[in-house]
Image (cartoon, rainbow, N blue to C red; front, side, top):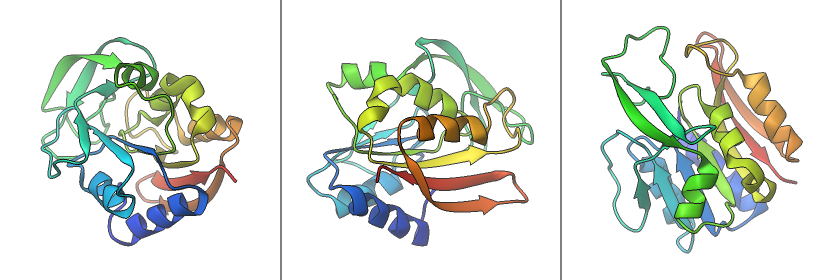
Length: 197
């Protein structure tokens, strides 16, 4: 799931309610469309789309990075599916892998250090079962984050993934409060927005 149309408007208004972001990161950006919408809403913001394998639909002024984001800096298997938007660190239980790639995975902290990013104001995380990994690898960067849009699962859709309650625990530990949620009960997956209030 990723915000489109109405959900994107809700996300932009949520960001606007807590800050005008200087740095926005879209981790698991897919084609980058949503990152482009955020850039249009906040033209002075440094918007960065991170996606290892999708085909970009966006160009400048959105920055595009081809990193795999994980909890640790290590080589990982990246599962690529024939269906766009469900590639990731974990294999989806209901879809076979078309192929697997051995790729270097990096923590969000590592990528930010490399890109000379000292803080993130708002971030969207849509990484097919690896939200916990992204947050753990962000470390103290989360202290300054004012808005998070995150996709989570409360059932194991991706083999070996950490579940929603573990992701929510990290966000709460950094002082963020859930202000919006869209749950797809039949799928066991949902999106939520967390703000620093």
